[in-house]
Structure formats: C-alpha cells, structure tokens
Length: 108
Image 1: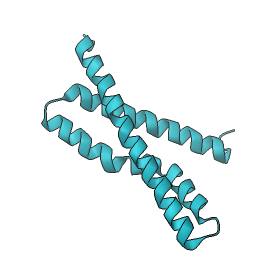
Image 2: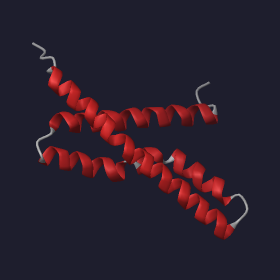
Image 3: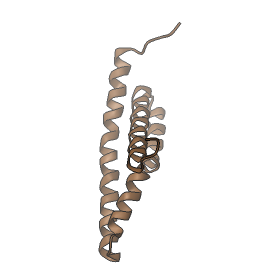
Image 4: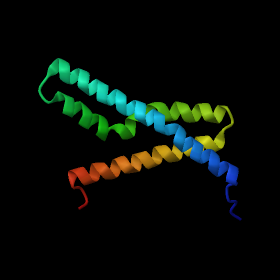
C-alpha cells in the first residue's frame, strides 16, 4: 500500500526548493563576476567563454552546494526540506540539460 506524503511534508519540500533559489542566484553571480574579471584581464571574447562554460556546467556546479546542504538538513532531521532541495536540484539539472540540447540542436 502506497503512503501519500503528509501536507506538512509537502510544505517542507516547497521550503526546500525555495531554500535552493538563493544558492542558485549566488552561483550565477559568481559565474558572472568570474567571467567579467577574466574578460577584463584577458580581453577578447573570453568573458563569453567563461559565461558559456559556467552555464553549460551549472548542472555540476550546483553539486558543490547541494550535497553539503542535503547532508546538513539530514543531520538536523529536516527530511522534507532535504527532499525539496534534491527536487529543486533535479529540476535545475533537467532544465539545464534541455537548454543544452536545444542550444546545440541535439535530438531535433
């Protein structure tokens, strides 16, 4: 018999997804700043290369903060929020993958 999650757990999962958003914003700002700094130092179009690689690799960059965050939430006993963080990371990875496939015309 399948047990449906309680309404409280669903709200905790939503909180976990919302908790992940500032981390994504901070990661995006770091990638932007890093590209700007490298573009200023090197010149040419290197700023766009850094931004492009950062955007394509965002799927992997997010693991740097998602894994420690899930470990911390699990240790604190906030399993619902941990599930929400994992759900948000998976959704981000799927959107990133679809954008990658669309931008390179793979599968069309």
